[in-house]
Image 1 (cartoon, rainbow, N blue to C red):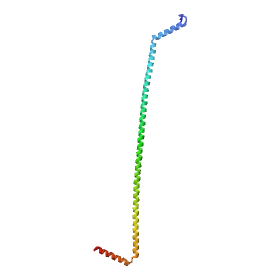
Image 2 (image 1 turned 30 degrees about the vertical axis):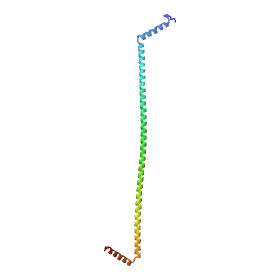
Image 3 (image 1 turned 90 degrees about the vertical axis):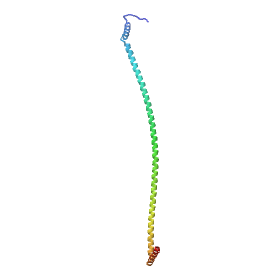
Image 4 (image 1 turned 90 degrees about the horizontal axis):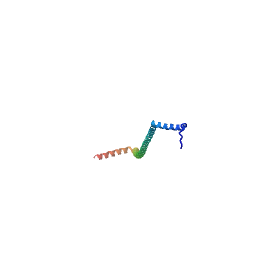
Length: 166
């Protein structure tokens, strides 16, 4: 390649200006500032990545913890349901026994009342039968017996009593 150093051409001056510009940048330490800025940006990115990793690990730990708690809660719920079913079965059985016991007591009470009513009815029937028999005997004895028969019965009763006392 051929480079022409003609001071009248703008190419030379542009080349010189670019070289001077880069020298000025180097002189004022712009390259250090750019490097520091890039290093700082890289450090921020690295910290952001580390923070993201830490947050991801925390999220995974939290997820695992929540899943464990959910499983424990489901297990407790199953135990509660099982216990409730057992309690309900026990209550149903107890209720059945109590109901059967109450029915037996009521049946026994009803039988006792029936027996009592039968006894009272028999007593009333006997009393009425005795009353009717007495009334009938009185009517029979009163009609068929004469005054002489009455006197004779009284005399015989007195005689028997006399023999009993001797």
